[in-house]
Image (tube, rainbow, N blue to C red; front, top):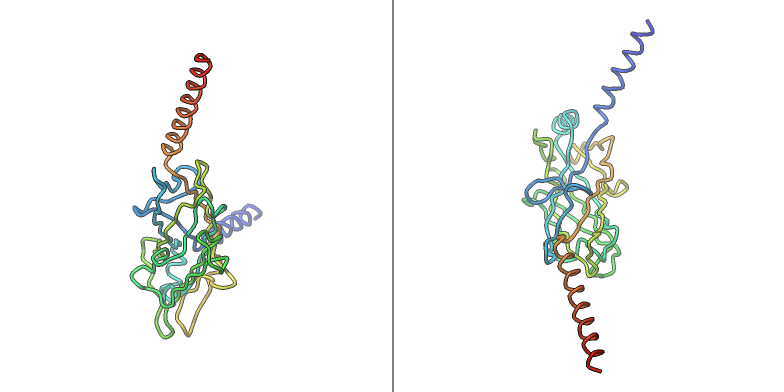
Length: 229
């Protein structure tokens, strides 16, 4: 009897775990390759130029069915926060945050601090469907493109780079499915998603070589001057 009870508890735990995995964020490069902090950092290249990343919503079968049967994905939001905005950030300006296929209306982008600065410490995007519209159907691929964001290098780009944290701003824009008249919030919101932005390693290496060469030239000139005297 105890064994049956333990088995029942175990099965229940597995079922609950599978259900509450819920929706999550995923950040990929333009080719759809997932970005992270270790094996695939966002590489801004030799000249450290801006690059676009894609913000996806991922989900399991339970969330897929719940959303689509109720009217689809209706609204949500995400906040991008660089650990050091002087290293890399989501710079202000048109085209820095893109609404895919104009699927959202409204599509609101806010920078923090609000007062103008080239290197904001955070960027928040909120998106929704128009009142009276149905939500967007989630595809069976288990991921849905929410927005595209341009990550730009700051004036202090370095070999360490900087980590970006992506979270859902729960108080302002939780992930909601359904319709304008009947909305439901996903029980489990996306957990923190992090990825790191770095310059191409050769940029740092070349800089080090150049510094060493300059140092060598200076030493050679000083040595030559001493001999001459």
